[in-house]
Length: 144
Image (cartoon, rainbow, N blue to C red; front, side, top):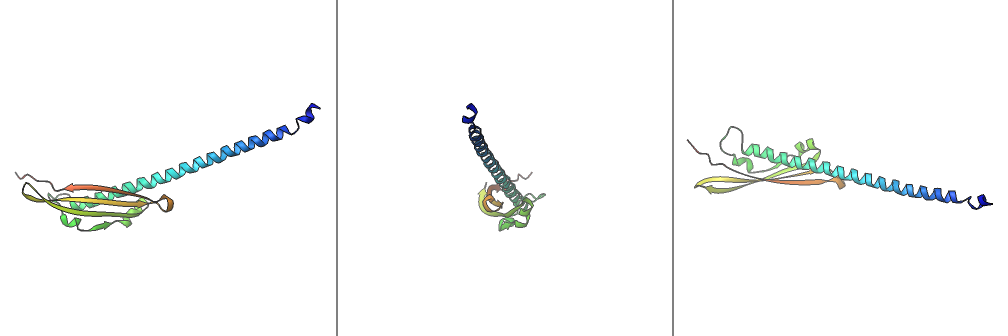
């Protein structure tokens, strides 16, 4: 008679355990998906950051070519679109805007340059944009 009263309790306990384990599994899947989402965003953000940095470097090398003692102000009279080069970073857009500001230093004309590079990587919900700004100026060269 003792066994007849306990017949359904194992079924109730097993259903409870299955339900709890299912809830844990669903929570773990959600945590894993969230981690993958975060990692994808970080990867695209890093690619965009490096692409923007590279865009500024390219324009700076045009402004201050190797072997020359003065800058090339004409290199800063345009907006640069490096969309083809951005594909190297798996990005869609890379644009550098260059502005020239003239001033006098010790009575001599000189230029300051403002470069603003913007890169966009990823697509849809993972689209990430990074902008970097760089300032550069002509150096006064002391003649011997």
